Length: 251
Image (cartoon, rainbow, N blue to C red; front, side):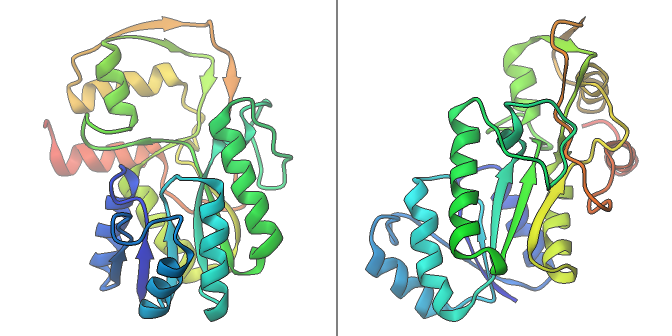
């Protein structure tokens, strides 16, 4: 399999890259300094040159970018993987199914909704829309939950917040599994299958990763933004944390 991938300067895409590469996939990185996202001719030439088997769109950018991509890959009927977010539901209470109406109260959620609407209008039959919760890395830098916790230092963690979340290596593995074994469509990836509260999860993460944080249990934030799916495409948080502790011990 050959894939073009965007977002390699972010946090999730490198995990996706590494997992796909471990499966002997050929990855072509979209580097914006060489292929500007506002240059239709260069975009078209780039995609025409490589003609990948799949297009992994993990980066964020202007809404117009997704339309530029679709215009170019549609000539070759290249399947598109678009990474969306539970933020498309942040204006309503969950848990959420893939059939729920989208309603966002912040700019990021509205951005993802706008991108999904463009996809559904122009390229629905050839696209995997994959919605994710808050991502957890194995390190405390870049944009992920561990980095947030360490930056906060003193963490107010609600035991009444049931969140959507998963570890990035598990997310990468699940994305590969979906595109290899399932048809195009909208998917939810959420490892919190045991409905763990944010407080409970933060306590586990502090122990496993030896995080230098203080945790204050609260009840001030009551919310459920779980992402439900018709089958478990991704392993549970408890399974993932148990495996990590077994393989790594203390870090």
